[in-house]
Image (tube, rainbow, N blue to C red):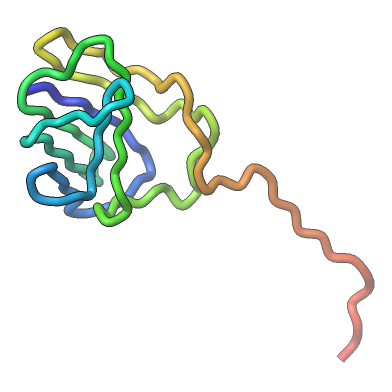
Length: 128
């Protein structure tokens, strides 16, 4: 079986498990179309911050992939959010066709991150 591992530091969730045969919390597409594998399985281990996606067989080489894990799965993003092009998110793959060593994503979109915050008080404090 092929496996994709995604290192998600700061993410939280216990008992995060999805499969295409038991729930609808996981959608995978490749090259714009659905990826059909009745034994597709995903899980997240909070202690290692690893999201693992396992296929029954091989993933097509040189293919783009989109993974959508719905909120019903229970995986929670970091409290501090995700910064644009954050480099701590890493993907690797163990495959019959050849392994992919841990690598950064080409692009990461920001999610729930505050870029700049400022608090200003004006005027004089009154007496009570």
